[in-house]
Length: 236
Image (cartoon, rainbow, N blue to C red):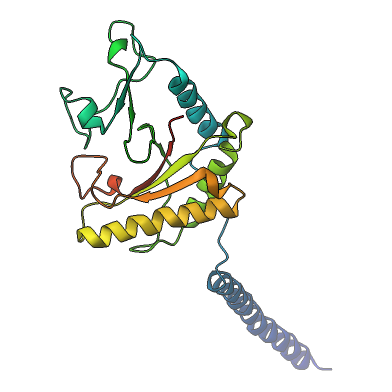
């Protein structure tokens, strides 16, 4: 074999190696994209971190349950009605409805601590925002919503809440017609209820209701903060 032949052979090997490597990378890239696309197409979602914990859920409702069982008196009043009806002289500030003073308020103002109970659902108006998000104009739960609801289901499985009943409320912002938002809020609340039932929560522990855009959380009815699903403890 001549020197020219050896050099030529080496060159040929190099050319083949160089041409093979990009094809391998390209093939691997295409394979990765195919796998990813298959995952999305089949509905597979990456793991999501919950926004709150089961402990936070159980703590919220256990405190509220304890508070609701206290007899009315100087430190607590019971009012059946909306927040505005129960606090007619309170300033609305930036919120859509007036707030009530928490139980741990100082002693000088503790007498204004009002426990507001909805006359229709008997839900205590101290809701836990489930922080569930949906696809645009639909009632399909997002992966992050499912992660949050799993923590919620664990939280209300606490033995101290075993007999508690919860109202699942759907709310929308002010964009769109009254009828459209009403249906959407009902569908979203129902989607949350059905998913909680699939996680093992007894259906008899859940009541579902939609309020459309009639109960904004903040004054600007079109604010995205008004698009929410809340859970409230039913007054015993």
